[in-house]
Image 1 (cartoon, helix red, strand yellow):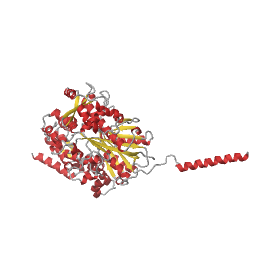
Image 2: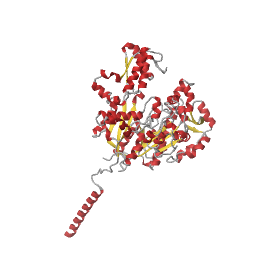
Image 3: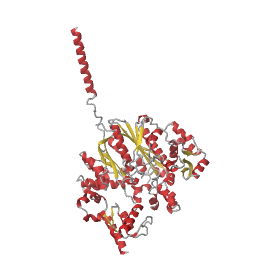
Image 4: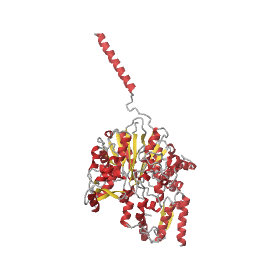
Length: 513
Length: 105
């Protein structure tokens, strides 16, 4: 069977402290309930500079400048031990807030983002221009007087775009009464779209892929795009592809909370393997609402507010090229509606069952990529070390199944797992951040098999109390598989024989004359 | 303990009587299990939810404390894996601490 391959991956981050203050829900809710609280007063003093955010090791791991294993060896707390602050990485880049506002303007198809002339001029030369169309870049020439922007924000027709507290632009409401097209919602949607665009252009540029090659895009964030008659109607996938000049692509959005990306990759793999499309991009931008989600605990614990990064990723799934690592579409784990929601039932369904069905053990997997939240963000908030908890559960399941001795449990979590490094942006940490590293290690022959696990908490939408999860197995490419039953040499031999037969007949006819 | 769960516990205790309700926890960490136990015994210590200043004095146990009451096969299927993962002793100690703290008070 010719399995689909992971042809490329890209990871991007945006440092967004002013967006955190204006749009993080923990902050906006507090402002409504306790506008004079000590927490709100202390918060600005806990925000990081761009330099500090870029030099933060987990962020460098995310864009591919450091291996996740370096985290465990690095002195902690990581925020007190910076590394070299590189904005460009092997897999992507870290963008500042100013350039990101420019990208929001470029990503805006309805003239809802307004930038002051002075600000627009200051960022124009700093935009990540590759694979953005000149038509879209020219958007930065359309500006507004700052006085008009101040009036729009003052009259609540627009949400401000701030840089170090200074107003430099705004996002206007798209309708005067529709709550789904309010300035706040349009702002959130554009943040997701623009960070998705950033991930896509990084993927195309770094892997030198012609945007015209992309057939289909699957967008997997947690944003709802639509007006009051079709909240969540979509389609961010095409909206993002348009800005990156993927003129031959169509697309659609797939939702599944934090498990969205894993469902997206599974669907992309199926489309490619079925031969419907050759190149499918799975991607997502990030979330402004989740910025500073645990900032109350970070402020209380006298540490920097580390949830100041908007995340994004893009993965290209292509038909088998005989080189890139394959997605084993015959070894897929799924949490079924009837699986049950105890942690044990979940690990059984997602991890143990698919392996067992294919004659494999948990210990046959070299690397597991479950949820990869940065523990330095979650532990101070009382949410524990999420990846470590997952590795312990997978190891304990292996012990229960007699595949691992209990004394090897601690070693298992260290060798088969990675320290978490992803920003707590819901769908962003779920398995996907390790795809770049896994692809490299499979290509270089350092590992033989990896499992990517996406998990989702569906109760958040109040429609079901069910849990959710999907797992996929990645392996090295074993070379192209013959689907016709004949290789080139065999076809040539057939032609030779047919020709010889024809010549013989012709000679025979001539001889008879 | 989140607001919705506090409201549900309060409503259930009022409906059936505080002596007829037992709260069983499944929390993964000793500290959070202890806070939840404290909330349903003495009221919300964070003064944020419906159980603020409401001392229900409910009986409360962590599921790990009830192992002997559970069908061994069900326990093996549902909980035994987590028994290996979590710090059972720390959780049980914290539950005992919280209970004794308020029984004495």
